[in-house]
Amino acid sequence: LGTRAVTLKSGPRGIYIRTAENALQNLDSFEDKQKKNWSKREIWRPAIQVTDFGSATGAGDSSIAGILTGFLRGESIEESLRIGTACGYQNVRVLDAVSGIRSWEETEEIVKSDPPLIDPNIEGEGWRFDSKERLWFGPSDLMNS
Image (cartoon, rainbow, N blue to C red; front, side):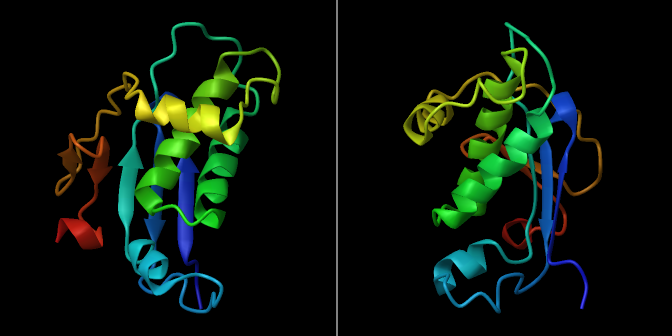
């Protein structure tokens, strides 16, 4: 038994996710390609830089909701993390917990615009930043070995 996936929202540092090997093996409704992509991963997605801050109320929840929505729509773990940070970014620009969240299409546009990211100051050994993906891959990530 054990946890198959852990996701931590770390405020302005971004989102960390680590998944177990074969994390989705018992979920028959997902394609093998998606199961493999979400298996044995360790990734850090930096937060999007915000200039018009409203409130952090609900930002972590919004980020996690974005990741889960990406997952349920069949997106890769990488794209789901980008969607999650875009949802957190939308949320912190308003005072309440929900009115900042935009449509799926508007959220995708934020991701595609390559907004400036906050440096998460990752100092651990074995971490690698991929400038194309705009993600940090950890020492336990399948794609980093």
